[in-house]
Length: 447
Image 1: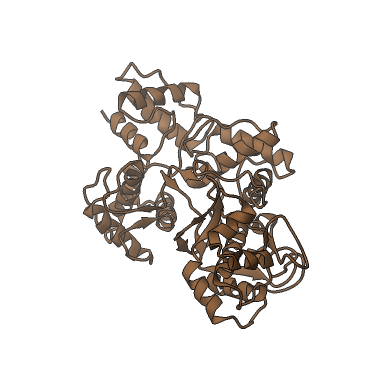
Image 2: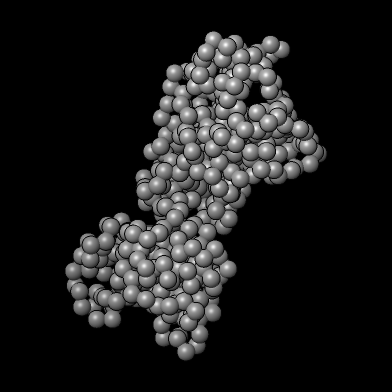
């Protein structure tokens, strides 16, 4: 499992005006943005501890906007505005100050958190003279610094004693949480987990939305029912598919009911941000994710001589590194031997291409290939029918299997047979067919 701590972005997109104005959007480096805002909001002659405390608030405010996709979930294509009425003052092409720039360089990857929450805290602030607010007073922070208070002491004075700093946060490219493709029955992974988590919380405020009991990160019938009801409640097309519009509407409602962009936020706990699937696999890693990568790489290598077909198991070995590097080179990805989420998207696409254009000389094998999505109860179609035919072949010699009707519908009888096979062959007993169980079922059907 992996905790998804917010990533400090390399860049941030700023709208040069209020949200609905016709102003331009510009993308600048995150450190340049923080230095610019700090130079616009603060006096460089202030005590260093006051400057540090205030720059922490500027960083955390911006990070909160980015992490919660405050504007993108409303349909905008930027992360933050330059307007102090809505966000923080940013002045394009303004000069900054060396001492402020130096502080920013030291602490840009640190942000404020509150209690056990992990999201960047919504560090509301004001100048303390012309305006006051429930948050940090900039001029008040100067007085506290002159009294010898540390930056953290200053922050605690305004935001509470449970304030702390998340130091050395991960830094990388800021990409929208939306995975870039629609999510529907059979989808799996962290995006599905995020949708399920958000809908479970939204349900507390909107009880008409059915509960989701699964914690597997697999888009099953229960999840589809919840999505359809959400779409009905919020006047979206009722498709049961989470496209970009539905994704960001769920994100917006979730952020609203949790008040994640509010000084008195319900907060996001470490448990809520812990996902089953890691975004990075490397030498020595073990488990089902490694096995999944091996399955798809092996299928690709079966048809592509540029990718070596090597013995693999559930451990990320030197053989895995060799295959991953060959795959990355073939598809113009960074050749690192480390398998990332970006690699996974390309690998899935390449595997899908195999399914669409399987060479004629290998047609005898195409029926055995996994369809590239999880099969769960409630689904229907040719892939379910293929699965049922394999199950029927097993039932003919293994009479402990409950049975199957080859009707193309993943019904209760099909699920019972899957559960029995999972029990017999030491798989997770969940009634869901992934690539490894599919391979086992194909193997058993040939006995």
